Length: 345
Image 1 (cartoon, rainbow, N blue to C red):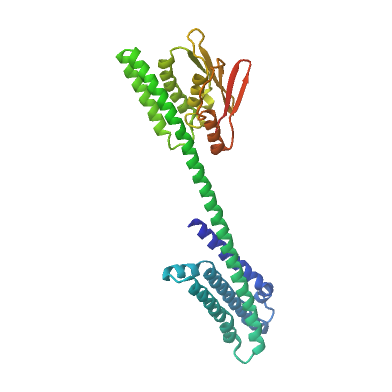
Image 2: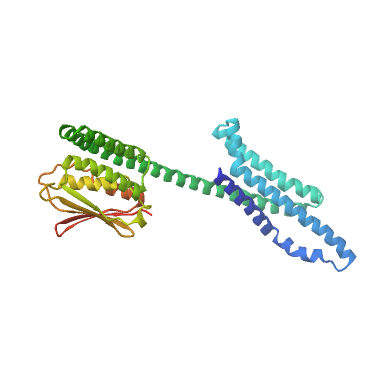
């Protein structure tokens, strides 16, 4: 609706500019007509000024009616009366001929009469030129509006496709996470006291509440994600004991910035999945940041023959590509594994 109003305003203003251009010669005379030197000239100036105003009003009215009919009104009429395509084309041709006759021939006769054929002819073709410009400008705007609509529709399709793909990628995380947490819950129930089991269930409910709450969001604050990571790491500690430690050094000035939901969880899960977690030598994990990135680092204690379902770092990278057009960076050196993820501002 807003775009239609915008095109209507631009079309109306274009009509005024074009009509002024068509009558530019008359506009130049107005200053002389407004300041006559004699009474006789004053009467002639009054008549000529009246003619110029009349000419301008006729051109402006004709242009606006013809332009708006061809731009929008013809479609509204066709939709209102459910006219077939063939009948609509015939109606458009007939309506344009009628409008041309109405605004070109009749005013010339009324102004000059039937006796002055030369004046009628001149007036006729002058209005015909205005008519052609009105139709041309109207269909130019029709073309521009259709191009804008197609571009917008194409962009919406791309957006919906990206949302669908993003949702599918996010859903890939849930089954894997659910499987791991069930294993953890089983281990706690078998080995821990009732109070520990209840605390574990409470933390587990908080974790799943976060997953559900962030399900419709493509990004969340770093503060929220860290809170979720703390709950999630509690669950993992119940499963693996103190076989890993997390040193969180993310500065407070970036906590309100954004990252994809479950991003830090994916990175932590990647550590526990691909590294040997031994009580004699816990894996040290550090999380730090710059202004534009978060660095998730861990000591390398690689497991052998680890089965992978391809839903970890690859998934996170695809989500970053869809959300902000950026990618994560992975490096491995000096017995340290590091994943660098962009901060979304």
